[in-house]
Image (cartoon, rainbow, N blue to C red; front, top):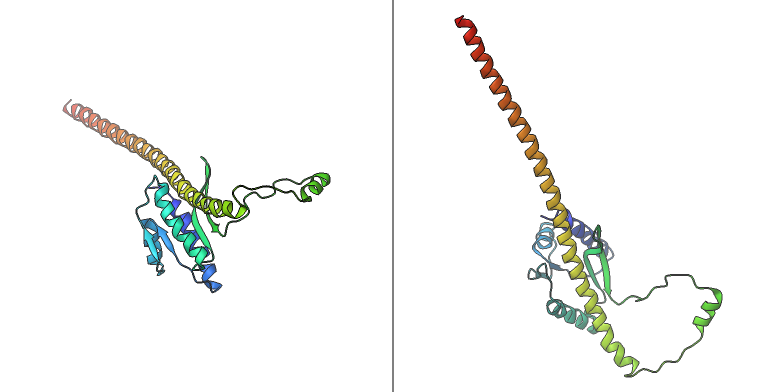
Length: 211
């Protein structure tokens, strides 16, 4: 009851999966929800794991369990990339299906504006910082947490986008039902009026025949 929500995500995921396999990449597919499980089973694609316990209010502890396994596999070299297909929430009026790379971590703060030459030159000068604890310890703590937060955000975006899609779909269904009721009521009233008019005409015709 959420319109094209699932279809959009599955289309993006299926296209990405086909491109990777065409390149000879070994893909491990994990699915969340009954719809993707049924879709890929119909496509003849076997999933390594399927999860059906994530509801419309995902909990961090549930996602944290997945994230720890992905991190362990990435660090050990069992996987070299983690991608997630989901519905990204942009605003209340717009959500788009995307396939996003979560591991390896991409640049956190991309350049958003062109700097003046003097400012750019100033940025090139080396700056010394003091870290406590050490930079290595900070990264070992922050990078896993950053990945977990990003993965959790994917689940949150998917959940809120699904509710918005369901609300829009139900609103359209309600409006269509209202229009159908109006049309049926109008047809019923016309048929009833025609029947009453016919009966009156028959009564008048019978009375005239008796005269």
